[in-house]
Length: 104
Image (cartoon, rainbow, N blue to C red; front, side, top):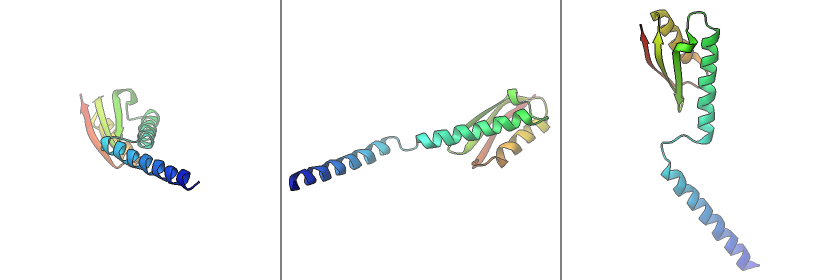
C-alpha cells in the first residue's frame, strides 16, 4: 500500500511539472477563459454600436485581446469615430482602446 501511495504522489508531481512546462511554452497567449472574456467584450461593444444612432456598426471592426480593444474601419464623420471610441472605453472589462478608425 505504501508503494502505491508513493507512486501516486510521484505521478501527481510529474503531472504538475508537465503542466507548468506546457504553460511556459504558451506564455503571452490567451487562456481559454481570456478568449471568452475578450469575445464577450467585443460582442458587448458591437451590440452598443448597433443601438447607437451615431455609430455605423457595420463599418467598424472590433478586436479584443487581453482586455485591449482595437477599433478599425472607415466611418463618415468624426462624431461617429469619437462615439465609437467612447462606447468601447466605457464597456466593462476594457483596459485600453486603440483607435485605428479612419474618417473618410
